[in-house]
Each structure stands twice: as C-alpha cells, then as structure tokens.
Length: 91
Image 1 (cartoon, rainbow, N blue to C red):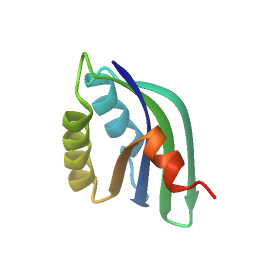
Image 2: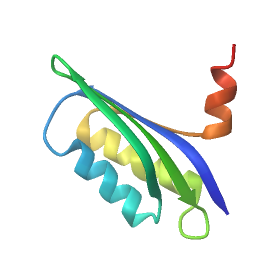
Image 3: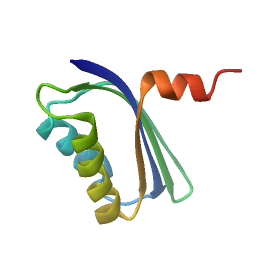
C-alpha cells in the first residue's frame, strides 16, 4: 500500500542534510514527490511530500530510520501521514 506523507526537517544548516534524508528515503523505497527548502540565516527548513510504499518499508520503520537521521544530524525530522497533517491544519 502506498501512503502519501509529509516530511519536515528543521535545524541548524550543515552539509549533507538533503543527502542523508534522501538516501534514507531511497533505501526505504519511498518516493520524493515534491520538495521545498530554505535557509534563514543559519537555520535550515525543508518540507517534502513523500510516498511511502509499505510493501517495501513500513511507515513505522521509516519513522525509526528518520529518527536516527535526526539524531545523527542533530535536527528535528517529522514524518506524518498526509491526511493527519492536513487535518491538523484545517481551519
């Protein structure tokens, strides 16, 4: 089953952030559908729309892999199901 998700990354800018996250996603068989990133001073912010293929890697397993990336990069990384993300921000 393919699950649309929203991935957010926030923290101090440094070399290798996009490469690390993209490699984790690729190794999990996830597809980056869209990506936006910006740097404000020394703060890095990135939002991705990602399709997770649960036949390759479960949502929970991918969250665990990204949690390790967050620890390694000393950043905040959050993966949410798109339906939950949209519901949280509905007005």
